[in-house]
Length: 422
Image 1 (tube, rainbow, N blue to C red):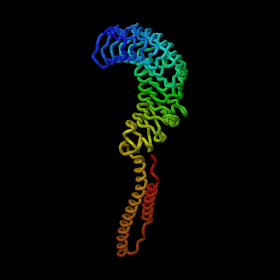
Image 2: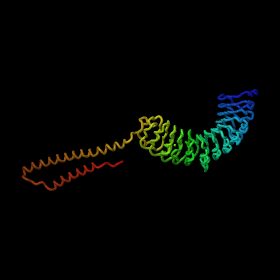
Image 3: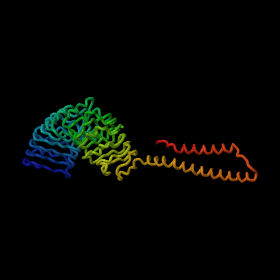
Image 4: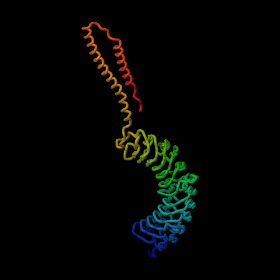
């Protein structure tokens, strides 16, 4: 890198095949505003940027910077002099060590993205000093400890925090014994805690955030129990994914206002994507899901839902609904390829009607046959009497006739009884 670059304001060398270390001479570009070196093969440590006081944008994503060891992020202290710096994005590198406390002194920082590195240790509480911070992306890394309560001090209207895919924190590390940390983030619009080892119930404080409107992803964990939603929760949420967990009971009714789907889910009027697949949810699919005007993708596959599929809005388009793995469902549009509802009951009803008729017809045939045989025998006996004189009919013969007719009547009564219910 040449030395006569002090007038350079924008340096965009992204998506090339550049390798080696970032030259120290870059710090001579005293008027540099934007530095973009994404998608190359840069290695080694990032030089100090003490001379770049006008720098506003630093993006070095998708390189091989850092060594995975302590001190890789020491250059952050040199960024304090870049008083206009509002974006630092170092995604997909090899940065190790801990997050330096000096991050809290980059006062105008709006976006900090350090995803997919090897950063370890705690999130420093100094991060709560970043009053203008809107977007914080820290996962996946090897961070431990709890979310510092100072994150609740982020007052910007569009704060986004993503710690997922896959942060290796455990549930206790995220929230500890005090979930009020999350509740303090009154302007939080996005939560991504997917692909972790989170277990136990989803904390109530997560659902109580009124600002959540973009994204809530808790998928691919070991979360159990019911969805603890209350009416009015997450009413502005656009994307809700809790798939691949161990959730049970019914889908909460609060979803209609965010085991089975609870009535509280009806509160999710702005939802566009709802994924509840691969859990242990039971009961009927609530009708209110068919009333969500903005819902574009509904995934309820591999649960234990039963009964008739609703007929509202999204259920009229099979390409927008996934119901695989729910063998007890019936009805819906033809493309869902579900059995018709009431098929078993229809067969049972036909049997209930046909059996008595069949029995009655059989009885008539038997009675006719018996009378026919009896008359033939009687005719023969009368013919004999003409030759032998008058002979009285034995009493036992009359009794046999009565017993036979009684048996036929009993069979008719038994056939006319209602068949056992299913």
